[in-house]
Length: 222
Image (cartoon, rainbow, N blue to C red; front, side, top):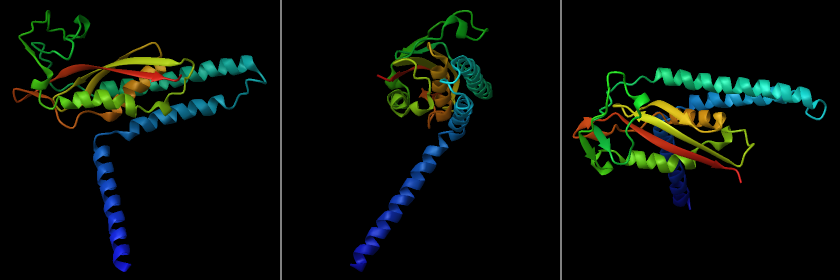
């Protein structure tokens, strides 16, 4: 009996230790502070709206709601823009290499020194070392997306397409968004910034790659 008790306690300690190590590993590649900032902005909006009663004065409530919602969007935009500016690109985008699984940058996204795109080499995704991380992100991001941070709920379906550049250090840079709902767009982009990047950079022919990818996100409230 005593032996079994010791065995159970040992198993619990081992399990807790493993969870702690796993949590530390996740924390290394995830910036919780960004999501905390989003929560603060959302709470400020909710608390402000809660001070007014729609039933007592619908006109005043609607006016204040629009004002507070505008302030919330401004707060999310400022957070996003600060992160965009902080994450400077280190490596140089090689426009000569085209991965079949990706799209080449558009004209307005090329550095000024490039006047035309001349593709020298077309490669398969499986030729890129550590490319599996891209596929893993595409699968896991919609599943792990923090939908609880999105408070709009006025529509049944929300869609956003994120584009991001993986730098030579594996970090996500120049994250941009496109979609109809600005709040959903911003939270999507901020969540990707919170992930920070891949554990390992992408390599081709033993050289680190700077590469752009697209990530669709869909929220269905039906």
